[in-house]
Length: 255
Image (cartoon, rainbow, N blue to C red; front, side, top):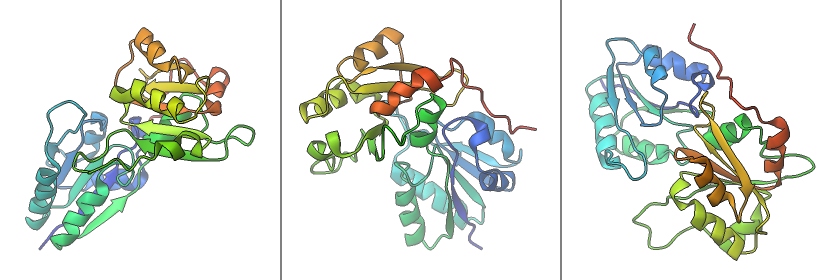
């Protein structure tokens, strides 16, 4: 009998932000296939007997191919296992969950998606940056800085993106931070637009650098920040000085 694959969003890092459904599935799975940025504490929710398979994907480092991951999920399910595919953030927001769901469907493997708390929303919030605010921002755009390498051309329309939303959130874009800021300025976003980079958002060791588009790359270098990080651009960043906390207090859900 074919097992089921559950595409589970692990949230941004803080284990307290895993959904109840996600924890329930982890507690009864036969195998958990997890990404590099998933908090390892979450693996403790799985039975000791469950197979734990890392398939880490982080920019610039060796990783399993997407085809390998797809085949792995299909193989485990076809052997009758209940599989949790544990993915950082939300599976369907730049998490390649859609590609995995396509592969599972093509192989006639039952699957279910369990939405997760996206880092695009949670990380700015943990840094005291509300993405919308009645006085400052009525629209948000969430962007990936790493598109599929097989694309003939980028789908990012910088001429529209630069001023198309009040708040911009860039995921997986640390290595292209300077280029991103320069493109936004070149296409009309004012150079003095507030910007923030949040490293390890929602973890106790979260760090934040704030500035403007024309100096955020320099401020990040001065603060010695690195990936994983989220870039936020827009007037809402100014609220971090008032609403942000020096140390993020992680939620506790381990009892």
